[in-house]
Picture 1 (cartoon, rainbow, N blue to C red):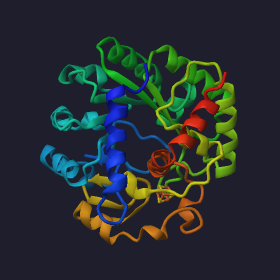
Picture 2 (picture 1 turned 180 degrees about the horizontal axis):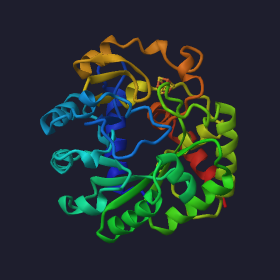
Picture 3 (picture 1 turned 60 degrees about the vertical axis):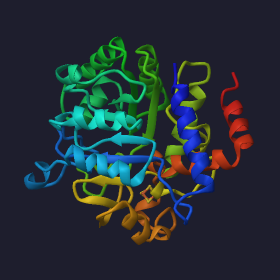
Picture 4 (picture 1 turned 90 degrees about the vertical axis):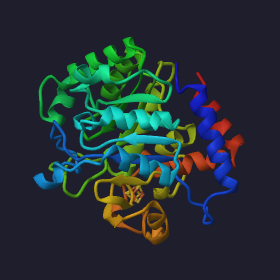
Length: 338
Ligand code: SF4
């Protein structure tokens, strides 16, 4: 298994075309971060997305607004996040519309409602359920604030895989996790036949209830090195480019590319990225034109100091891979040496 060839070819062709075209300033989007609602059925202590008042939590983007967002930005990949997308009554209609436009959709979910709503979806190479699992049972349930969530997610993965859906997982690492505990989780996920795993070191949201369990950048690099070393010869597939994984190990010196994964939610287009909220623009074009992109990144904005998140740095790595394919191949081969 692994990311299907059709996705690699289509995204690769898109990046190749944009490298020589783009919108005149070299900026283009690889993945749209779509947040059609902020309401969630959990209250994870590291989350900065769900602390809005009730009048905001009851708002939702309509399917028409979601289609408008992808038509505007044109990215080949859409990550539907939130909030919990499966709480949106029209989520299957939104997903179907994106799949019909041949967008690769990652539906990010805590999996609590998978069993109830799975019948609304049809397996497709364009649709992936991306299940949130941060740690092994006790740690995961503690972080999401409810017992049984881990076991439910594991069952949901089995159900989705058995019905022919693409399934990936999303793991955010907080202090308290080690290479050993992360390795046990990844062994389990590999045994469940998930297609690939997304990993990140947690971003310190200013309004998240938990402000203590974040790695700084050096600590995160040390942990990623230990995890990847332990993973040699084990059947782990990560949902990232080889150069991004190399960046996580501290071997690539990258600046972030926040415009590569723009965020659209109920307020509009969020400046500058999925993680920081410095206001909104009404259109994608306005976001690209009016955001002072040079203000952001490590050394420029204190909120960015320890950020290594895929939403900011995977686009950098993908663009680097397109510009330097031999370097990308060398890193890929080095990383996959037995
Ligand atoms: S470094 Fe991270 S938080 Fe800062 S702009 Fe880039 S993606 Fe956003």
